[in-house]
Length: 503
Image (tube, rainbow, N blue to C red; front, side):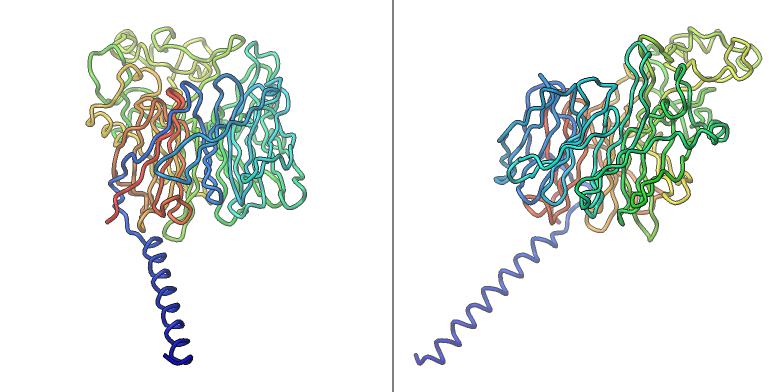
């Protein structure tokens, strides 16, 4: 063979090999998946209760970082490089801190949210390199940074600083949101809500809650969870105990509005609750009752050219030694005009054992209750991100599917029901799916929200005990090129990995 022929043969072989590799890569990245077939592929046990709470995945190093508060503030590092075989490779300890709350990853950086040594004092966000686990920066933020996240462009780190009071309710720090500018040497701006004091009356009229003893408006606010818009310009923050969502301009570092969430009317046909754990049955029914939504997790998504936020309406109360708003309905004096059948309603088999708030409902201040307010929406709400308008509420259908699957825990009927704790919304095979964490039934519910006003049930699958963190990893970032849902469960310390079947 002459030199020209040899060169041509080598060139063609190279082209064919390169082309085949390209086709193979394209085949991997364009795998179609069955959106209704998520199943467990791998699991790891990190050591028991509170040892697996929130997780974040780094596609650059194929490491998963998991929050643990078992035996101290820690981050467990899990190696996914040999996925579906997963193993713990390291533990990061933070002994000087009262607790660890959240982790997030972006562009090879790991952000960790830590309480201060004094939980009511300032907390910190620590930034490490995911490759070497070396500290890059430690930034002081507000009290009790409960959740940390990066903006999609990686330029900002945001923390929701809950600022809970101490147990005696004698120290109540301001609830704040910190915005850290990564590109500006991690400069930080911490925002409080004192500027909304003048709007208090209108916010309360819309169902917002400000009620902590001797607390100022800014002290009473308790930020819980953050979602950032796809363009990294806006952030949406759940104010769980306050029953609202704040909107933040990330670039200017200002809080632009608070949206009160109102209440869910349990007397309406579309909003039934199972309210008793002592009635000998599981039954959704209507009652003369309203429920504050009180959302925990929040997820931002776009579909059909519009932007939305999904809210996991877990519910929460202020139940401290120094102040406790919780009460059973049977312990309250009900207004005889508003509740003519009060004696019957207050039986254990009816509303008697339901947990409600005694901070609201005595509208005329005469010592009896004119209305009853449950402490949690038991649902997933979808809101228009721009207007704050309610687009859909997945509650009755969600709980009924859990009941039909034989997984409903009737012992929780008098409190938060299935306890909708977490949510993440992502695109799988051209459909927009909401993955909803149900803490008290140890399951994930999957709904197709491609048309947000008409959510469709897709699937239920079992998790570990008390799923806390629900993380979605896109196929391009996943260790095996397929959609991945990672669920960390605080009840038993397991992290489970779920993937759909290929079509």
